[in-house]
Length: 157
Ligand SMILES: CC(C)(COP(=O)(O)OP(=O)(O)OC[C@H]1O[C@@H](n2cnc3c(N)ncnc32)[C@H](O)[C@@H]1OP(=O)(O)O)[C@@H](O)C(=O)NCCC(=O)NCCS
Image (tube, rainbow, N blue to C red; front, side, top):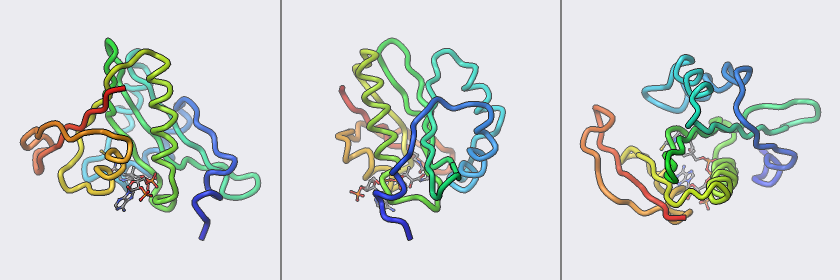
């Protein structure tokens, strides 16, 4: 099993491209009860307010894989994180943390003053992740996911 440092050594964070979507869809389907479709990701790639990045890892010499990805909308100084997921085999190794560090730095440089997102009440891993970055649990959107409430979490930059 790789250590946390190993999987991130040699990684890169770069804008999402159409050629990434096959791998992304596999991770997406393994990550969410209601996964996004290819058309939804394609829509984001053509959406001028959408900012989407992948983190690519090199688990072995000559091999590159998508470790995780994130999709945000940035509108009038507010960023909305719409999607973030990590390849199940690389979870718990700091990939989401690294993606968020890079995204928050990018947001600061673009004069974003507030970042928010919705998270399922039952999603302890994600709530802990955002909590580590100082996101505060602001309010509940009842039945946001149909079957479950969302907590809206907010970070002032
Ligand atoms: C949530 C998710 C993105 C975290 O990605 P990750 O790369 O495994 O997270 P990291 O390794 O960077 O962990 C960062 C912090 O998140 C929290 N965390 C991550 N996995 C956790 C788990 N299984 N249980 C509890 N807390 C967890 C911890 O606070 C951790 O900090 P620590 O390592 O100091 O304890 C990943 O579990 C995932 O893809 N889940 C499915 C998709 C999803 O729920 N996305 C979020 C939608 S709002």
